[in-house]
Length: 371
Image 1 (cartoon, rainbow, N blue to C red):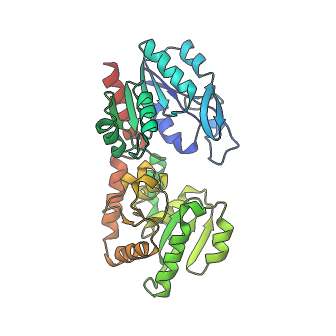
Image 2 (image 1 turned 120 degrees about the vertical axis):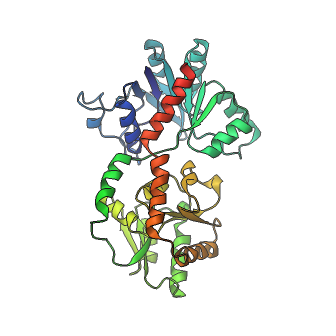
Image 3 (image 1 turned 135 degrees about the vertical axis):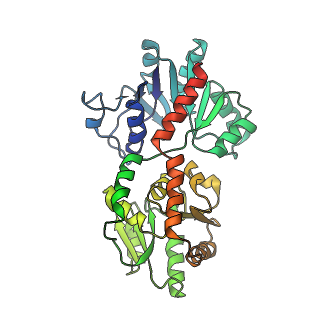
């Protein structure tokens, strides 16, 4: 079975799923652009077969992305690849404004070739025009991969799509994280105090201020006397927040790139609190057995929000300092068994949010379409 995957870039956080697919008995070939001067870290050239014959990742950076106001509108060379080399099925990233993706899907449909669109799906708050536009785009494919069950329900119940829709979830480097987890219990903690943490970009749009204000509020009321708060990450507003809020109990670590150090911080935290938008940081936290506290507005989160349940986290009212403060105190006062919570966090990742499960879902959908 030969499968063509058309992607935009070679993001480092996608390396684990590309490795899982590249090592499969089926032949998965991933086409993308390769750009290094980006804020998002890219896969190292030494790990890509195109640049290094001994590498294992079947990534071929033959595409050249063209953007308009940061929106991908065309991928040069895509049509040439599709016409020059036949595949059993083609998987496209759901870039709905990419003309080259539209043309490729239409061409393949006319040639009776099978296609899949891998997309975020719909959120349910789209206007009539966008909904019609998006539905027309998705109807060009024989199958749809989305990241969450909520999006699947919307596409089936509201968009009335006839194509099979499957939830493919998302993942990070599951095998590496499992390897690190085995040694965490025997490693010394990075703090002798109990603590909460945040991990992500230090930007005002992440609503970090509400977390900092809430923590100070609870400290001033002596409701968290033995707790610290670790802010892990860097960003455009790092200096502003660290200068304003840094105390003995609020520690700004700066950017940390060593996964074992990040794992230690997450593993030993009471919870990871993300007051704004959550995404892959949910998977990162749950992978090391740490629950997530965030706001309850699904529309302002990435699909990974769905991994948080009342057993693996807690929710507060978006933008409310009082609600966040109450949620933190309720979490502390609940005196949950930390080991049981840790196992429930692991269970979510082991069952759904890992590259092995993603590969099985992708292959099952392909089998259902090809048969």
